Length: 493
Image 1 (cartoon, helix red, strand yellow):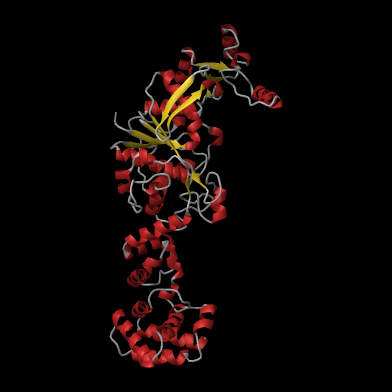
Image 2: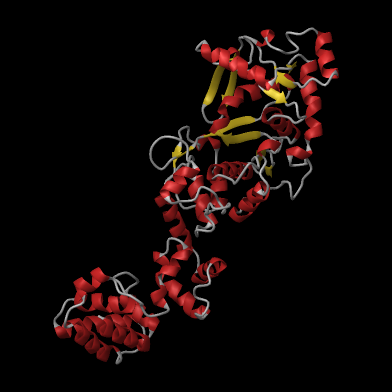
């Protein structure tokens, strides 16, 4: 069979960055195996459905460049790709399991279930509706056939539960962790079909994976406890199961536990790809999709060598489940910033300006050629394209000056020194090399260190001791602008 992998999010809110990594790994493996990548929306839980969430998920995938071969908008040969549009499919599979003795009708009300749990808690136990007690509860296993049929015909609410085999050593394989053994008496009889006529995740997921010919199920580690049930469902349906690969969790930057929205709020970084309501996204704060994918790709997987910077195509070429790690991967914002800076350095100045203008209009009055030249000067200092907003000195004189820098570097003799330097500067041709030469010659002639002229020059031109090399900056600004900024600084300081 052609390899087919799916990313199957639920539209219950915005897409978490952990979900983005799951989608990415499915895409990488699918393309590495020359297979298909599918997006399926799992919206069977209508009580948790959130308007706009599906569109948000698909827009996030589009921004990141994770393109599906089949999805709800694009369609495909094995659709529909929304579970709510497939609900007629699931009933016959649930009833088929009942007919084969792999499932049963349960009539327990919500109140009944609450009472069961409370009784177990009083006895210091945990209630499981399963092999050890189901014949004592309100279901078709404890009732005779005529009573069961009567209740169904009279409209009594029921669910269909899976009939977990009793006391069976269940062995199954996890492509990341290896072989796993579970005794079925420790499992509960999960609900497969709800009283509202909708399937639960477990039934719909397995049925759809089979009908859509999914060959690999790559999803978050939080679904590992469901692997036993899903293995049993494949056995009950007499279907060949896919390969299962639960992914390690994304962990908090510090401390224990899974990365959450609260961690992002505390650490000042997003946990969603795009903005959602009041929560800002990675796109809106200026991260590049290539950098985010590169960063996420290496959170839980390595290519087998020291390579860090990779395009999506390069990750596809190197990806394998064998190199997915078993332990959780810690989120590191500084590393993401490094990836973003490296991504920008590979872009041309023209591309950076184009990306900047998609989100900003601060320099609309600056001619594009000047803006591009300014970006070339500071490109290696940018972490995000929006950092260009902090480089206003490239296009207008400083409005203020760093107090600490001024106190340390601006002396009584500084104005005279700067004006003397200007007299030498106006005599040389344009070009940063010529400017560098005149700076050195001036210092030799005056018998002063480079810092005596470079630091006050930088303060006058930039407003602080930050920025690109002084000779390049002077060449970019031009003599007239340099004269004006030195005059303003000498007057103000």
